[in-house]
Image 1: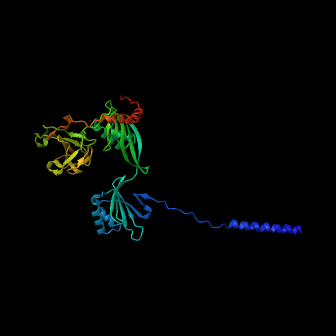
Image 2 (image 1 turned 180 degrees about the vertical axis):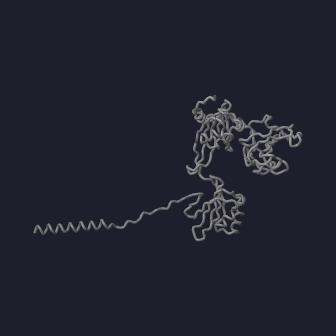
Image 3 (image 1 turned 90 degrees about the horizontal axis):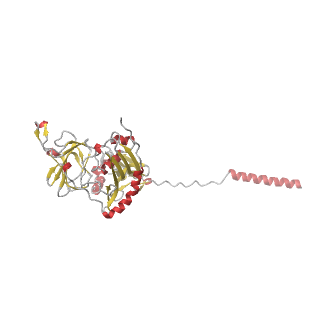
Length: 417
């Protein structure tokens, strides 16, 4: 009887184990995990909802041709262009600039949104899905502070190449010291320290150089600090001041072109061999530079002339106040219109050879009380000084910047045998 019980018990255990094994080898089906698609946002749109086309404006392309190639009828293109003309001139899209089209995800694949990238940061959106709208915007930019220093051994360009620094930093430094230092006449042994910002899109894509926050330049043995400070709290504009709060800017820049050379000075007794050595007064100062080099207005003012006329070629004239005006001749292209307000350093045109000229340059003419004079012999006014009420804030602002600059030590210079 006992043996029968053991046999029955063993059978029950065996059946139970087989059942458990069967349950293990045939588990219940498990539902697959739910995958949520990643939402890709750009230009204010969910790109997952569109077919995205990225391209570049090619020579000969037009806004109309681009849209026509992507399903937009000519009548609709005309309607869009007319509606947005005051905010975005479609005739001025430039070859080489990237653009993005957001197209419908259906059988029509019609374009619905056109995004034109003015530069790596700024862009213009033309949305014609339902109504026609346009807006200008910019990609989020992160500013990263950089510090650099160096000693001029041969020239500024070579020094920046050796330090693997963007030459845009040099251009911005030239702007800071535009009146106090002639960057075309730097000497071997001149030294600089600079604190500046670099721009990044999405924290990784370089997007150019920001502002010079502070710098130190030792030229011909003379040290000169420069600190950027907001001196107009109403309009939120900034200027550069030395460590004693003196404004580095003057009412007029030394030259209308960066890194150029003077090819001919103001000279009322100039004789020209081509004209039989006859006296032909030169009432301007010529700055030679390659064609296409930007020309800047040397002071704030209102554009009174922007035209092409005779020997002047294409030129611009700016009235700065009741006393001073400046004129810029032989441009290849003008960049401003009559009545436009321009600030010191704004680009008003580009170096060319229009009118009577034997080489690419800008003839810079300086008018005082209606008479052309030599700008380098004028006792020109300084820019407005920093107000006394702002000085405590200024000194507090520059303290850590000056401390950083002063902590940078130059390498000992080797003596030239």
